[in-house]
Image 1: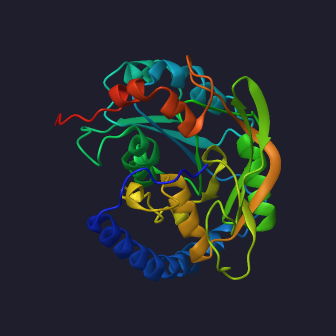
Image 2: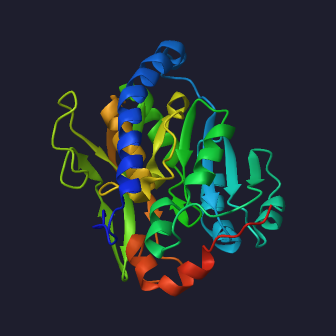
Length: 299
């Protein structure tokens, strides 16, 4: 869920966010029109089995990644995919663990440095932590469709197949789905959030469209939308500050054709030693998170 800002915004925050908002609002709708003109005809065949690019941003969670995300991707009923794993300058054994998995569909890239990006608070790590790795992954994709799964997430075996066929049948550019999440021992199905709504705080309708957007681990979209980059300055905003909410809102405002599949296709589970998920988990383990995500200046 969105959290109220816990710091006083500076003049620089307002200036940078104002500039970005103007730039995104002016440029991204035109980029979408151009991308459609160049690429939409490649998606006319709704029966094809295209290459899907799956990506995961990760930082020093090698064991958890090998236990959760990676096996759930490799277990997919839909087999025609590449799997891009981007380490945010991992210093643990992530690289070695991935190298042991002999699957030609897997590509691992470890960013060479992880220097200062924003004030290193636990809140900012939650808001903007994976942005650099995400954008690197988007540069690397080769498929016609893109799906994201974080290192601690789990997909159902039919995840890719269901989302692909749903998107193809409806001629959608972006689709998402329900998620089963666990908080304090109780599992519930999250039905996403309606845009526009108080969650997204979009009061003016855009083309009079209502759509639900599910959790990031269910995002599935055409690869020509990869020009919607994740925003490293999302933490400066007064609302919609989480990096994925920021980019989803921009896609919606630009006019991307979206739809929502009411079927649970992923599990959002607490990490080992934690009892809940999302920002609550970060707040409950604040000291551990600050130590885990601290920046370095290695070249």
